[in-house]
Image: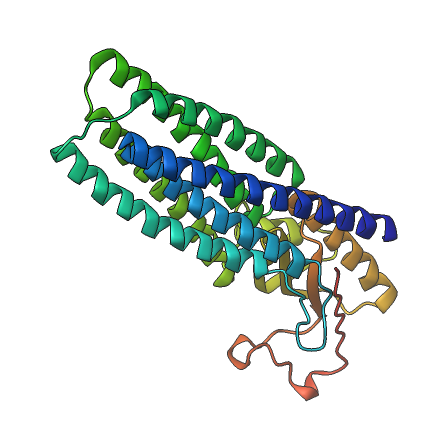
Length: 315
């Protein structure tokens, strides 16, 4: 247990350092994009500046979330700060939606009225951006896989692809002299930003609304529990996410009227099944051996005889 905590703490520190470096590099690149975009009259470069500005916010929010995530639970925050990263990702995605619509609007205006563009400037600035975003995306991808880090990685990958398109577009403008290519590229960049943002919004809202975690089917979870020897019935089954990578489960399980030592074996078998098949380790399981009155919120009558409840919390 102590080894695991120490390892997680080490990963958190490494992620924090990478985010700080990424913030500084991204800020410098935004300044370069703005200056180069204005001098070259390139909407594609200015769109990239907007894209990277959203990434700067994503990285900043991720850095704050990493700090909050490392804070221990308390009497008022019994789950700790697991959802700080989820909230950061949602705010980040919302900002991306706004940026994408602004880029799409400006691109449509430029397509109607193309302007002379410095294609050479587009090429070398885009090449620098490809290298920077590619390295940052790779480093962040290796540092963690929660939804907040994934959102930041998605931004960097999107930037890498869009800067590659800008580079190709610069060559195309040099070769053909068609300046409408610049706003057309901007339109594509805006569409990519919008698509990635919608995906993050959907995932974060699902977590905040305590929906079934991504990749887990409730029916399969119920079936897995029912197949454990000694389990007669499963009801009031709920699966949700405390944080982006922390699924939790609670349920009522009906078993025979057996001693606690025997029910303990069933409990361990259920927990092992949930861990192996679904990576669910945070569980709250209640055992019963009488009929559960669902209409009264599973409140078992006092005259039902000897009752057996077993609550288990796993972290």
